[in-house]
Each structure stands twice: as structure tokens, then as C-alpha cells.
Length: 155
Image 1 (cartoon, one colour):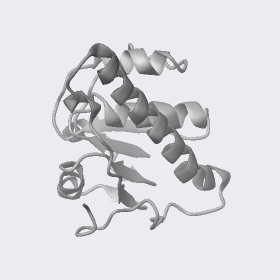
Image 2 (cartoon, rainbow, N blue to C red; image 1 turned 90 degrees about the vertical axis):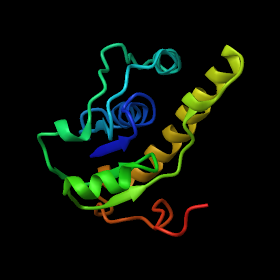
Image 3 (cartoon, helix red, strand yellow; image 1 turned 180 degrees about the horizontal axis):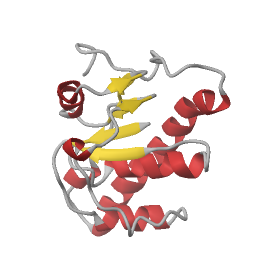
Image 4 (cartoon, helix red, strand yellow; image 1 turned 180 degrees about the vertical axis):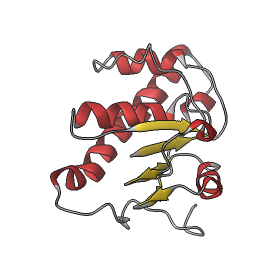
């Protein structure tokens, strides 16, 4: 499966790491960005809190992908769905998840860290809920309408 966000610095690497943690050895989860970004120190901190080492994460872009076939592609930023469509990936399903970008939060260090924790915790729940049926073989990778956001449905 593939998670895609704007710069592969925050949302998609967190989601992919959470998927790998939730289903060790049962899922291959990758992450890329539409554009290149830099590793984010806040990501390292909040993921370390739950036992995930992100120190080796290096952001990658969609154009660097060698594989072009994924059972499920989940986009996590507004620019990702169009970029995925342009890339022409073969996917069993493509879903767009509306999630906040904590890197845009301003304020104290603790306020920023809390925004990253909130993203981590919401993605952790959503990833487990969405992927459990796929990993258990209960459902194919088709779009689950409770998770997909169709064009025009976004607020």
C-alpha cells in the first residue's frame, strides 16, 4: 500500500510507519510526497513516544517510485490525488483522507507537539480500522465509502 502527502515529511511517513507497526510482517506500506521535503524533527519525537524510530526516514517523491501497482493508495493532502492520477498508478483503490497538517501550526513548542500527537493518534486509529479487514482477508481493497472523500464532498 502507498500513502501520499505533499512532501513526505509528516503525514504519509507517519501513516506508513503506523501501518507497519499495527500489522508487522503482514503489510508492505510505503510513503511518498508530491514534492520533496525534509525530515521533520517533531515527527521523530512523537513517533519515538510510541516506540517507532523515524530517524532513518528520508523523504521521497512520487516520481521516484519504481513500483506502480498498489492494492490501496491513500492520499493525505489536497495536492496528492491529482498527482497520483497523473502518475498513472495501478491501484485496487485510491482514497483521499482529509487530515490536518501539523507543520502549519504556530505557537509554543508544546502546542506544536500536541498537533503532531493529535495527527499521530487519529491516523493510528484510522489506519487500524481501515486496514484490519484487508489484512485479515475479510474484504478486498475496494474503496470503503466511510473513508473515501469524493470530489465535491470536501468541506
